[in-house]
Length: 117
Length: 110
Image (cartoon, chains in turn purple, green):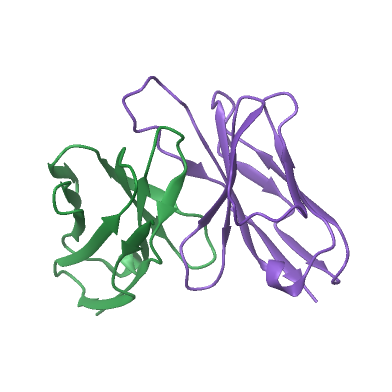
């Protein structure tokens, strides 16, 4: 399978614990995005990388959230001191940035569903 | 601010045609995307418009009017498997992030 993969698919944790999610993008894609989606809503942008550089981070993202993409391939998203409001589906997407013409459709992974008790 | 509006839900009959509208107000514009999302699954790409006009792809077509901040997704010959959420998303700047609407939940009835 050459699509975007995410691990784990489901995570249940207690409030106050730290969690880490992993995303493996499509291999030739240089851009990687993290989104969060709650029930009945569209995905909400969190952050994105071009290669290993984190180029943009949402102002909605608190300092409890951190993301890395150390070698420009896979990425991790860590949430420290989880709160019940963090419960959501965390989606990763990747795209191939090809020139300035726009496009570069994003391909989404299956997501990690986080439940904070 | 950034705002994308689409109807919350729609119902249509198998074999019919349905049009899902999307209006947007964003600080920049570098393209509009439509995604399909079945319950519990990841969004999958349907279409992309950056210039005004109609893009056709099989049973699906998407239209864009940049001056009106308006797009629609047209689904023809509806099938039961088309029951899903349809997400309108705008790429607002060169950065690549997508700004999504809340999605339109389409139910196709026999």
